[in-house]
Image (cartoon, rainbow, N blue to C red; front, side):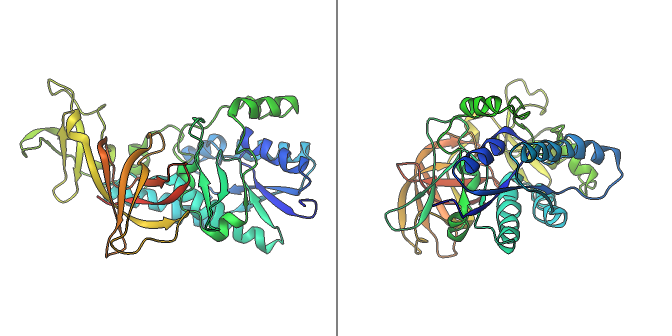
Length: 365
């Protein structure tokens, strides 16, 4: 019975978490809301603008969350996670780009901010669960382990971004809107008179609201990035790039004119070159992943293999592949058919045929 259970909802200031809080109250939980304060004390005008407008993390979002909490008559807290956000999200983001990789800061935020730190503070407050507005469903496997199940029919499915939650974290997590589509969530919010009902979804990284990664990186520790050569697959110089931080695998725009469409195939940090190819050249069928988290199954032993569905980016359609555990603790993945732009630094998530997360990790090479 939920009546005596206390839940802290991570209120982002958006419609999804707002409706999640409402549903939990309707189910009889004792609900409180919390929003995370993540920005540093900085008088720089650009940073202040981000604080005001920065997606799910800015001052505007905090005020929207506060209004929802007041409407639902529940306690509301603003929790300070500035230091951990700087270390585990921003510094990580910068360091990965400096290695020629393309990180996913939202996945890092989920892991280190919303769960490892928010959950720890929540338990210290005597709360039983944390809840979020993610479109993802927690399920229990026949083995007793918990997993997250993809909704193949929901374009808003967010299971990919949650692959690195642990069993203990899943036991303490509720996702109330897992079986509801986005348009229905907005209808619920509108019927309640919530100001977040028509609020657009955030489409960019919260700390880079103008989506200009290169400018952000140059301003935050990557000012020593040098121009270098574009080379073809034979090593011949065919142009000049403006610095490796401005590019990612599979990119076409912003490369210049070559007489035919060209794409980033490889970023070579050793000699500061970027290899370009035609579109066929950015397809591959295998990669290695590290920093693994096993969710729906116990960790594989070295040499063990499993046929699964693999997803190499948020919008990637899951594809058949075989994963094999390596002696060094990494995972080798081989797709049945080549996939486009497998990118170091991005996360790879593996599902069983029913869409339940088996495990996931970060693409190494």
